[in-house]
Length: 60
Image (cartoon, rainbow, N blue to C red; front, top):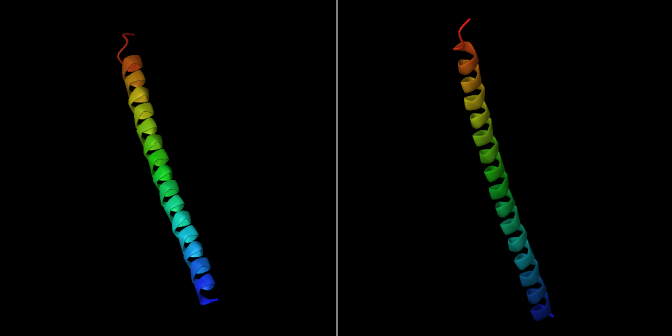
């Protein structure tokens, strides 16, 4: 009976470690998404600045 309980406990701890690994992979994906968003907003800022500069430099 003790052996059966031990095997169940090890299976549960294996599932828990798999879940925590999935969570860490998910948080890595979230940080990659936020990094992409910041890079995208930076590109938008550069584009908006270039557009304003081009409009402002036109004569008349």
